[in-house]
Image 1 (cartoon, rainbow, N blue to C red):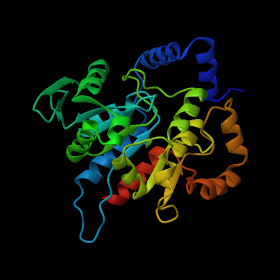
Image 2 (cartoon, rainbow, N blue to C red):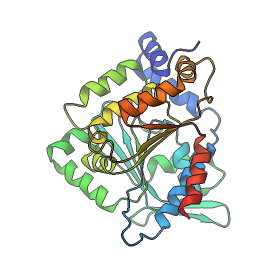
Image 3 (cartoon, one colour):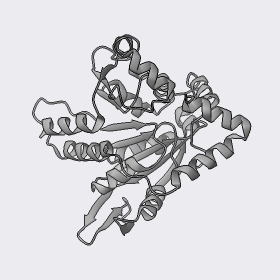
Image 4 (cartoon, rainbow, N blue to C red):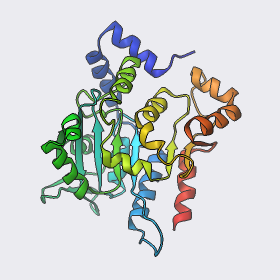
Amino acid sequence: MLPSLDLAANYYAVKSDENRLQTDVASILREGHLEIPEAYAELALLLRELSARPVGRGRRRYRHLVITSVLDTTIEQAFLRAGMGFTRFVQSASGKRLDINLYDQVEINPGGFIRVTERNGHHHSFPLDSPDDMDRVIEECDARSVSVEQAAAGSPDAAQLAAIFGELREPILYKLHGSLDVRDSFTLSTEQYYEAVSRSPSHKAVPEQIAQILSNTPIVCLGSRILDPDFRLSYYLLRECLDVRRGQIRRFAVHPRDLGDQRDCSHQMGLRAWSRLANWATTRYGVEMLDMRSEIFLKELRGGVR
């Protein structure tokens, strides 16, 4: 049987060190080029259609926010390939820094090129079939950084963050556990998980603007099992805003019960106790579990909003 990812990462960090852990994980993720999962492509299409949908009379418009623990850039690539502008926030492992990118205008040209334009008019153009160029643009496009601690204290960082939220392009992609292309941002090991949770009472785990969206928006967790350590960490970091309207706004976790590595202990436990786990998820987290593949769920949801 395989240990959980956070435990394996903790063992590696102790055996070597955390810097070596991050470097080696980044190298593994960069080997070859990861295919974009079908679920991410469907998510991009859904968000693009929702953004273009006119707000009906009397219909409430929800903000479009994606929070993920995925470290690679396949979600960003899916959004760009769909010709959709967006804003990305990357939480650092220390919890003290937010790295932000604004991909304001994205166009797919007939010649097979993607053109990404920043708010200042500067643009990046690269071939659709060049993942390396795409990753470079994902990392560099309209990049800025703010201090979470200073922003919480009402410094110039707070004004800068407020200005960013005033001009950002939806959807918002919030990478709570870090990103492959951002230095010192990974949250991987058990030790880092405990540190993240221990910090959260002293300052907001996420900016107030993100917390407000989470408090007032229906939530769908894709590909997350309730027993996964990254799901539990995300929940506890965000629990203050998630508890605000618990029971009033529906929240779902979409994951087929039989999808997973048979050697994974948490997968085996979840498979054997699915019904009881589903009841526990509703009681403990206020989350309804759906036994369905993410891409099928998104495809059906996209059909329903047309």
